[in-house]
Amino acid sequence: MNLFREIWQSIVRRDPLSTDKGKSELVFLNVWLHIHPAKVKKENMKFRHSFYLGFITFFLFLILVTTGIVLMVYYRPFPPQAYQDMKDLEFVVFMGPFLRGMHRWAAHGMVVCVFLHMCRVFYTGSYKKPRQFNWVVGVFLFLLTLGLSFTGYLLPWDQLAYWAITVGSNIGSYAPLVGGQLREWLLGGHSVGEAALVRFYVLHVAVLPAAMILFTIVHFWRVRKDGGLSRPIWKLAPPKAAPLVTIGAPAASAAPLKASAASSTKTYGLMEVVTGKPIFETITPEEEEDTVFSYPYAFVREAVALMVTVTGIMMMSLFFHAPLEELANPAKTPNPAKAPWYFLGLQELVSHSAMLGGVVAPALMVLALLAIPYIDRNPSRRPSDRKWAIWLFTLFVVINLVLIVVGTFFRGPGWALVPPWVHVVGGAE
Amino acid sequence: MNRRSFFKLSWGTVGVGALVSALGVSFAAILRFLKPNVFYEPPQAFKIGTPGDFPFGAPTFLVEEKIFIFRDREKGFSAASAVCTHLGCTVAHFQSDQKFHCPCHGSVFGADGAAQHGPAPRALDWFEVTLARDGQLRVDKDKVVPSSYRLMV
Image 1: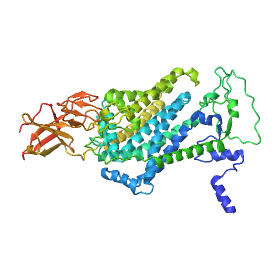
Image 2: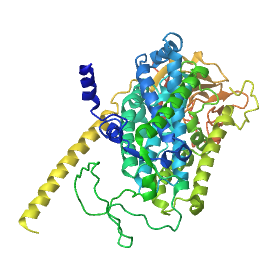
Image 3: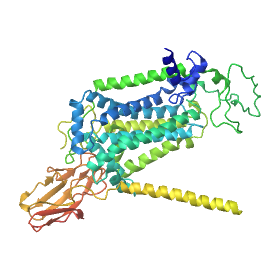
Image 4: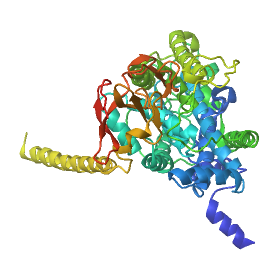
């Protein structure tokens, strides 16, 4: 028994979890857990502050990586085989439809959750100083999510995939100067074909996931370095409260902190003494009291979020099948031919003007998103102090949603305006 | 500026410059590498059959080539692209109104291919039709001609 004990202790090398020291060491002696702080602020972990959307997005990404790797085993990225492999997954492979379903619903869920996460961060003002740059990283993660979804869309090589990508890649060709080149470079040809499939495959399974992981690391790192999860709105200090006290470096105007004698029961490690103020948020004594050990408080909540996410995606895959249309047919455009739903707002814009709707409007939208933390210099995070910002962002969200809903449900054959409750018989051929 | 800082600056510039240009050239090479030298695609110029294969009146749609072949009793042969100039969907030719309709965004092109309705930015392309030595019709998609172009056989 002693040997087993020794082996176990050689692995974990920490005090028992019943002690505070053990709880701290669990976090900072473990390479996977030490992205967490040893202690978290209880209120910041409240569900009604963040809705755990960032966690859920990350868990969806984990599901996507896992199911994606398994699906790769049965997939060959060449035009006729790719579609046959889909059929195999549907009818031959053990749990094939379930795995494909999980991959699909997790992908769609990720687009939704990234967007909702962005909304939450905006409405709680959590992109404000010192978190401006992390908002920018987040916008890139959003774009990468769309890129991964778009490249994944082509892989089944059915009619839906083929025409969605034809329309999508042609939108890109309207970009000034580089447009045509960009399209040829992306497709490896003049139309969506064999070369395009391999390229999209490489982007989907190697290039974009790698970029996604790199950006995610930066994103998480900055969450920590920018002061952890943001303070919930309801915990913000009243507008004209006393200035924040900087632990260790009291402002000249503030009353000097009473130095407490070093406790004989704690040990302190001192890395280095440098002058200057810390860049991250400093905490008030009230916040200090609010903290609890990450183990078990934060870990239990994250585990529940993970379980709910996985279960939700599994349920979706059990009850809703990932669609598969007939083999891609370059000669026959389905009517109407629609891009993936998250691009239908864009397609709706493009149906009015290719240049304005397909290039100028989306480029401006992305630039505006990137610039938000630098344009909105109002330091207050209280909703009552930032009515304009909230109105403008809500307008942006509503416009996008309306465009997507119109493109998805109100566009029939020939892109004519057809309400979803009207059934078109035959359609224009 | 003294001797020491001069050398520091100049060697620094040379070093950073060498690194940046080496990386720049490498990445440019990668970008170029991704642009194919040869496209394994159907040829842009191809034979479509003898004139007698094509009926008068309604155009013949060639699926692989994505072109419409028109044969008019007085005017002769012409070939129109079936690729919508908007986002590349395949247009359909309606006998009822003699126009081309795109299923994707509702663009409509007149009988001469001119964009009449919808988001299409320009007219459909018309391609050169010639008679090859062996008596077959030959279409060259690299040669765009005015919509008035006809080949009399």
